[in-house]
Image (cartoon, rainbow, N blue to C red):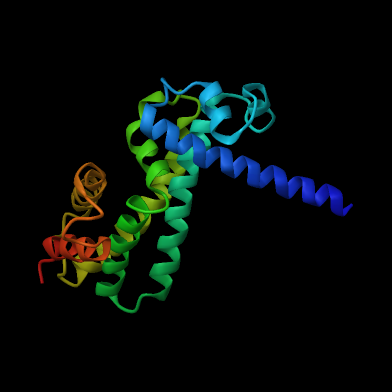
Length: 195
């Protein structure tokens, strides 16, 4: 029995290794240009062996995107639970988003942002649910902040504008630049505040 459990755990860790490798390759080379052979080589598997873990290359793309948004959502939920007060909750939005986007989840989130067009119509709905769950956390906090006069009242457009601005940081932020990720989060938050 324990051998079977170990085998399952190994399968899970191998699958996660594949997802993380796919995230880097899809980001760096693009989904269309990344071959199954590239993916296999990245983790030391024959290309045919990948299909033990994923039925198709697109299933890998979905797994990459789901990993990025799910991990970020969980981090944000935890940060919001720990935050005391609306301003602290606003701070959590910016810090979690940027630390995730410019940190551990960077490759997966960049793939989510820039390879959305590579998904088939059949695979989008599940990812839209995950994205909407994340954006609903932002919307809730922004509405609380608007009610307290901390941000403008047009919270739907504000949410889209803020997330668009934060997403664009992957194009210009330099780790060895003048700002740490935390400092960048604080400064971007300050731009959004009205009070």
